[in-house]
Length: 582
Image 1 (cartoon, rainbow, N blue to C red):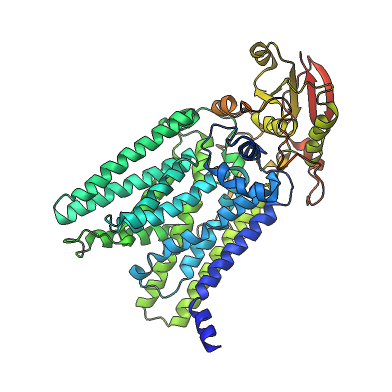
Image 2 (spheres, rainbow, N blue to C red):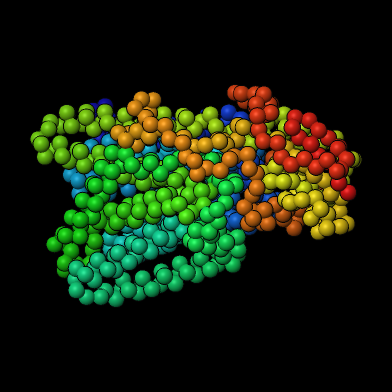
């Protein structure tokens, strides 16, 4: 019994880490299952990709497919695409607590810290914050990209501590880099930037300290450079839309656009998130660690660089890149909003380092162990509650872009009108791709965005229909983005905050979609035609039951889409209308 108690005491941090993981997973599932339908403006986009993989082996979109394949087993196990994808995302997101914890623990010896409280705080901050929930509701590929990014940083640092140890960590690092690239272009490019910066820093640092060129590291630098360029080339060839997104972000084009801002989709966000005392203290701590590593005399005659020095360099590069991309006015707001949402990564990793710095300072002041641990734990709890409070403000804006009644109206169209008054081989024209995803998912028909005349000219032998759908305000869209900035806390809190409105955000009712998405995502895969999209694993069914709010009651507050009055009205109910044009 004494041995058991001793073991529990010694490994209590493992229990607390798993408790954070379980809490995050349960919280994710609670929020994601308040409504049965898929969340966000993209609605069943991920469902379409996964169900296409189950049916054909390939996704329907030409986006990087890794996320879709990762979510497929969860859909197959639950036999429900809505629920399966939510479980998969909750699990992947909650698992980020582990790399965040172990990344923070890499600094423990350097800072001579006696507690694991800061590392546990990092695990909590990375999984419970408003930006995280903005992504899990609307930008799932980005969130999975963050998961791979954290793992990449951990294993890359473990490898570059001694590059000759490539068999143990090098291969895994390269695999994680490839996974990052084939997850999403934004987080993938960020992963490439961090990895290349680490390569150059490692080579330059060793050359400077030893006064000679290390041929093995030079070979590694050249080989990995070729692999990265080759990997991006393959990505752009297989998925051309990624090249257009890549060049758009790099050249800061479309800066005059005011429509479809992603900033309004993701929830809370403002560059001021970077300017809080806890975060700035973390910046000071990481700069101190890097400075000491650069000035260290221990590395003059050896080829091994401290993990803490390497990791501090990565943190600084990541922070600088995200801050610049978040504040540059030349970047379109929809891209800037994505980068602001990624702020939770450096915040979760750097704020705990500031806490470690305080802990070290208390040790130098000969503070008692109990006083030091109590004070650090109290600050960590306040920071954690601040993050949780900020996350709860995001919950109310998370939900599907259509109401239950609208979804059931689509089912009525499918069951009562398809192959009767509606030709299943016809073309449905929608004014926005969000509506198109729901039409394609439920009706299984070919969907196009644009005008009815343009589509009719393109498909002269097909019957053309137009479908409009009033978008529900429960989609996470906001007219402006507010961030309750509190300089003393990493996130907003119910006291002492300054509410700041982000005027750069476009009006959420603007439904024009990015050209690359309109062109590439709304075309059904070649193997699917007519109403054959009756996916065996998860057929569309009547939705009712556990919604905590009647979304139909707020339906009229949404944005009514383009109405086509020159056709024959076939069906109209609950803000949904379908016309036969020709």
